[in-house]
Length: 181
Image 1 (cartoon, rainbow, N blue to C red):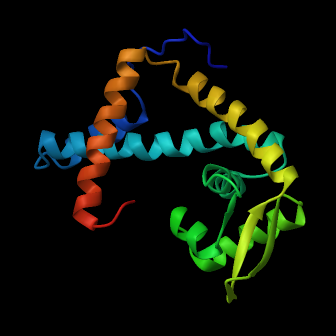
Image 2: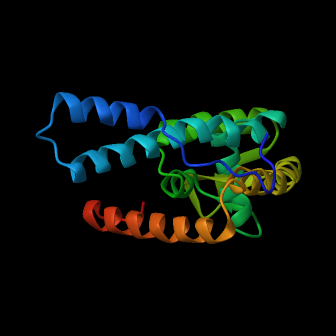
């Protein structure tokens, strides 16, 4: 579907049509405002299109993006690949209920185990099992290759520039809302 050297020319898209309708119906909206509308429209559409394209790698291995995120957070934490549910929820920006749901699925699949924290019996610890570590190590290689292929429609210089711009935008928004999102 996406070749390493595939190129997609810049063409009018559905967002251009929507902005054109607004331009016609509300000529009082300035070009800067309409350009912002177009950019947000494309960012939203990009997220919608990317989700299933990224998620297909995880689906082939029997889990979703959310479960992969938990396994990856545990794997990235280093030996002994163990974190508290609270730390996982904070890392993944999830509610405790959402984290519990993901952990239930992963535990049922034998990819994580939960046990009481010996240093704080009011707390639990979540650890990767051998099967969980094998799954995440296998999938992460496929995942990054898939992401590389999806981005191959842009030349390397454009990918670097896009990363720089998105980083700057995210930093500005994070500063506005506070915290590290």
